[in-house]
Image: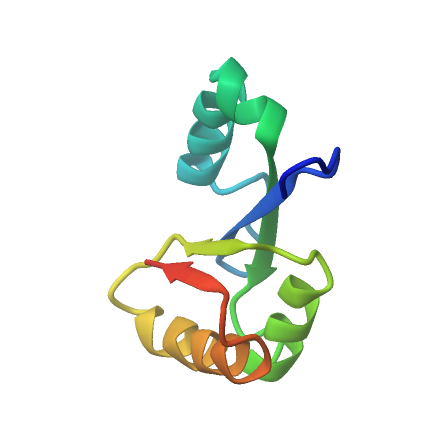
Length: 103
């Protein structure tokens, strides 16, 4: 990225229950904290993506994440959704081997 004005992107992914309104609170707090770090916010764009439970297949979720061109993807997981996130991560890794993935 040396000499480039384009910032790296971090995509934070969360899930919400059917019929639940609003954003994933943990991801919102994390984004707010990271955006407040001036040195980081100049270099990195933080994007929140939320999906409803059973809304989309892992392949479709991965495609939507990759449309944001992230350098890093972070998943906010619970024990009940870790398997579906692992499937999304596998799709991401297959399409973009250099992407960083954190749970």
